[in-house]
Length: 254
Image (tube, rainbow, N blue to C red; front, side):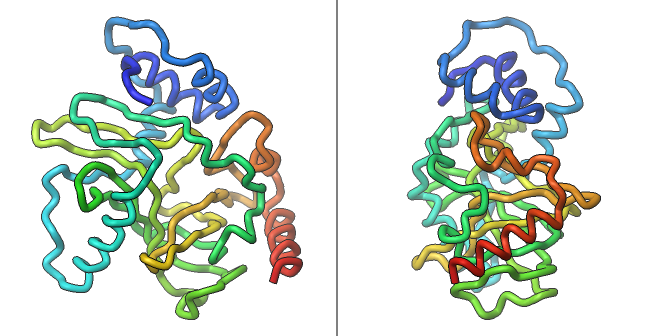
């Protein structure tokens, strides 16, 4: 969904930080009326945007052969992305209200190829192979593996790459555009998260299905579809209780 003016878009971002229920209601009403002027961004809006890594529109191919092959594989995956986040150099923000969370439980064990607890050590963004999409990639230092269906190399203490559609793009004129799926957040470098990861046969890298931030013994929503979605019930929950629920669900779905 595009064509929002900057005022309403910044308001939308602020609402995402405060709670995605209001965002869902906003999208259901469609586009707002035109506004003039460029209001100053709040700290919450700026913090939200800064969590999205930046890719350069003229980013060169990696010189390392293995890295280039991995980048190309991920790029082809995001060529096929159907979220609607097509790169538009004329828009400050492009967002979509795709129904990515419909039918998804709060603890999507069956839908996940792997479930890990880990901290984010690096973040970056890249364009897809056809240069029409942007995705963000995060390096996760694994603290605990709660489920692992396909990749035996995932062990405690190892580093894995996890990607998600969306990010920021810096164009040649210096303008930076923001691309994001409503209700999906981006993890912060240095943060600790419980991540549910999906994987396709054509690309062995992991994509972020949903995540929860774990901080000071409590749970904070990385993703917030709003509207009473099951994910939202873990906001403010005890970290130990969430992890116990995950382990119980994994044991029930070996």
